[in-house]
Length: 291
Image 1 (tube, one colour):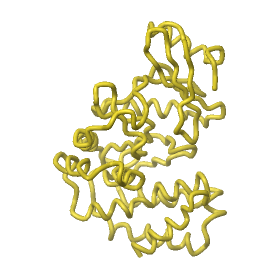
Image 2 (cartoon, helix red, strand yellow):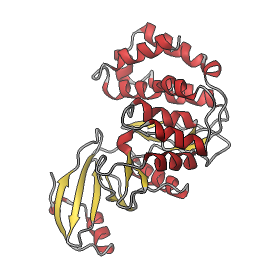
Image 3 (cartoon, rainbow, N blue to C red):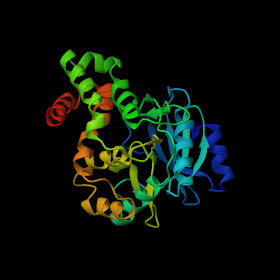
């Protein structure tokens, strides 16, 4: 918990500039593993979300703000950025996940339209972050190389991965990466949210599909959609995918490939937390299924 006296001056100035009145309440917002988050209520009845991290890695919040702007430019609703600093980010408050039930058909079409924003190369002009670790965005025209090297194998040297996986596990991951061209068809290079699990999918007060906490890059649409199934099975309904396919049809076999593409986030979670969530068994089950 923080109080108004602990709010950074830049945040206070941004609130004054927004003509939102004085701070009347600051409440902790749950859900984040990396940063602290707070809902700031003001006398004008307008609220804001303040994300803070005293030990934030370089450009963490700058990259998040830039990612939100990229998604906005592509037509996706995201929270307005009111102020950004080395250790904080002040955002428009779109409400909490689960506060309003999305129109899933509308959400599917919105993500599909976002994915129609394409590029000639995978990656991004700069590295950003997925969680606390750098997301490597080295640009390439080869999607299999990009996903294999920079979304899967890049985690093998991370300390928790080295401590957690056996030599056999590592070899099997490397073997699967070599087989990616045989498992995943060529796809357009499109603008991804990068961390598209259901808790980052909100609707604003007007019911408009909205995204928060991006890790933007250009990649395979299926890589984005995989997280909606990986952590959203039962939460993100099939009608979301049906509506998506009306706007941006996916190549046959896409549903099974979403499960294969879980490997990116499985490797990331091991890098973040080790085997805290029994994630190694998830990895081995996936490797068995797609051997």
